[in-house]
Amino acid sequence: MNVDHLDKNFNNQSIAFVIASYQPVKEASDLLRKAIKSILKHKDHDVSLWIIDIGSPNSDHIVNPEEFPTVNFIYRSFEIRCFGFSIGFKERIKEILKLRVIPKRHGSYANGYALNYIVSYFKKINYNPEYFITSQQDILVLSKDFFSDMKKKFLPKTFAVGMLKQKNISNEFEILHSLCCMWRFKYILSSKFGFLPDLPRFDVGEKIIIEFKQNGLLMDHFRNSYNDKSVLNLIEKKFLEIGDGVDRAINDRSEVIFMHLGRGVSKSVGVYKKKNKTNVKQWIEWCKKYLEF
Image (cartoon, rainbow, N blue to C red; front, side):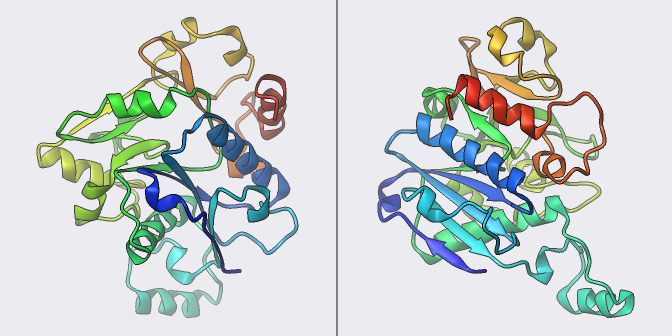
């Protein structure tokens, strides 16, 4: 399935919000719908929203671009180079022939591939936003100040502002998680690395962050309940009702501006095994109760 649905106004918008999505089942599509609605509710005219979807089935449950005519949709079929081998194309083919099976989709590699694809796509259509937000579908934007609060944290030498600062996957470097990270797009274009992970040492976008930090550029972040539990003592009760395992980011006024379900696709297809964590149904019900969609 290959679909390009573009809103004609994107060239006038300086912030590109990109969601790398995958919709194997209806519940995953419902997560995407909630994310889109939360962004549309809180964004202004200067934000273009992009859905880059790699490998979702051609099924009635997936989000139809006609549901959101002002959103840009790029749907692409699953390709071998999404699989996640760190070896070359010929070597990948040899491995497939040797194993006699097609390697399974790997979430981090598919996510990194989707983000690399959209950067190349922007070059192709001559879209050069000032800011580039990388995300996935199990998120909610919860404040009209979300975008302005992020932009306020940019200094002249800041390359990115994120919802979460943490150690990288190998626990060697302080990085920003790529989820709802706002980057200066010009720096993305200048990087010698792409978004593809290099596991087990580097996850999505981590090599770019380390490269820029080593070049003397700056990053900033918001407080997040993922690694700062004191955040939970500062926020409204309704943001606690969502349950355990949800990440909540707050601005300098202690207002929740962002939430992340975590493992949304895995939860939607029933392969997530950790107990007592907020599930997709609870996430959807919370949206209906408090966001009215």
